[in-house]
Amino acid sequence: MLTLNSREIIAKRIAFELKDGDVVNLGVGIPTLVSKYIADKKVYLQTENGLLGMGPSPLMDEVDIDLIDAGKHPVTITPEAAFFDSAFSFAMIRGKHIDVAVLGTLEVDRYGEIANWSVPNQPILGVGGAMDLVAGAKKVIVASTLFKKDGSPKLVESLTLDSSGERRVNQFVTEYANFIFQDGEIFIDDIYGDLTFEELKRRIGLPLRQK
Image (cartoon, rainbow, N blue to C red; front, side):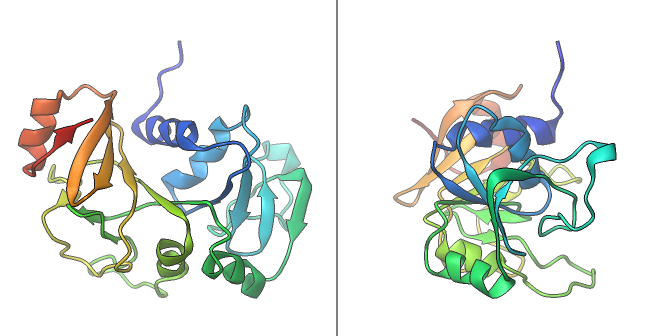
């Protein structure tokens, strides 16, 4: 039996959340892996650089250098795919035509506000489409490992990094559990890792409730 790593566990769990007919934007990093696990659903993947109908990553001998996602990784296209310029792509996002945005993150506060673009002591080109997606998508799912390299949680009382926008995300999918932000509280509706509910409460240090 194939054992999934943490990133793949997160991607597969997010694929479970998607519904037939959804128009979905996948951010850079873990979110791009979601495309591997939606073969049994009719989901339309949109990229910020101008594609609706993105397929999974190609085999090495099938790479087309003109077909890339927003993170510059090679992709395939579905039979009904459409191409357009970046301005039209962002009009889709800002016009609330994206059903679900799946984004990576560096931090999430207890109310669902995220910081996912400013990396301390690292040069960056800018916020990119993060703020547009946070504000414009009908539903926002965060995909990230739960803990930082030093063992501290990414789910925090308040953000220490630059916010990606005032809009709160709907859920935070990690390799241990699925966190839902609702009415100012954090709910866990699914635990599938090797930490119990009590262990998650202790390591995160925030009030958690079970659905």
